[in-house]
Amino acid sequence: MSTTINDRAETLLKALIQRYVFDGQPVGSRTLAREAGLEISPATVRNVMSDLEELGLISSPHTSAGRIPTHAGYRVFVDTIMNVRSLDNRARDEIGNRLIDHDPTQLVSTASELLSKITHFAGVVLVPGNQHTRFKRIEFLTLSGNRVLAIVITDDGQVQNKVVSVEREYSESELVEAANYFNDRYSNMSLSKVKGALLGEMREDSESMNQMMRTAWQMAQEVFDEDGSNSDDVVVSGEENLLDIPDLCDLDKLRKLFDTFKTKRDLLELLDKSLAASGINIFIGDESGYNSLNDCSVVTAPYEIDGQCIGVLGVIGPTRMAYEEVVPVVDVTARLLGSALSNLGSD
Image (tube, rainbow, N blue to C red; front, side, top):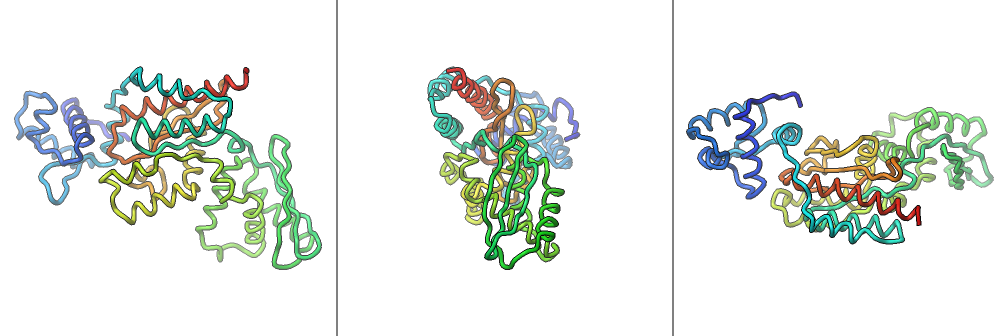
């Protein structure tokens, strides 16, 4: 976001966001003047608020003369105004004391629960494992009885075989063409990205594919078994916390959001995107790229072993969240989870 505002406007935007996060009510000019601690008149505050509204950083609900921050306003706050608070010792100790286990699966589950408990939002963790393994190639070999043997090879030398039932027999040349199509399209992508891409194509009009493209896609879909793997790749805790947040009370929005938690497809893609980035990532509203998360913000951080990023964790909540408090929880949990997993390897 390239929007630049002066110090006075910055102070007022910060005060407005902090007040709105606190009580969820539109903020009027008199309240804002008092909250900001500036020796300026309500009329001056109104002028500044008008400028901020023109920039698209705040808006005025139809039922109130007060203003609320927009997603763009939150973005300016997060990028240029926010002062991240240090995590208090009590919360840090709770995380450190709970992340002690000899089972990596349990450590990941505990991290997700802690994120949810401390922030009162939903905690998510991308499990270390195949998500950083890259797909190398697939081969299809014909078998008797309308069956095809699919062989998936990854960059670390792993080989997975699966027999796929097909509607008709395919010639050797047809199967080579199907494999070439798939390999050209997906080679060198992480396995989780391949799964995500396959799911994305499910949403597209398959009529735009020719028959061989469709055949390769359908056979590969069975091999990668998206629905079964997603439940293992992403751990989610505390979704029920979001039911108590007024900002997310719309039933249709909640239905879409909880479908996202249930299937985990979009979460897998979003967390995989975060895996490739360094440090804290904050997706506000539609920045995530998924309609079901348009009214949410997602704060993520990668966790590492010996300097290598092996997974990512985060918090999903409303856009009206105290970012300066959530960020350190996510950051510290990621660091302590990485440390706990590293200690398993040294035992």
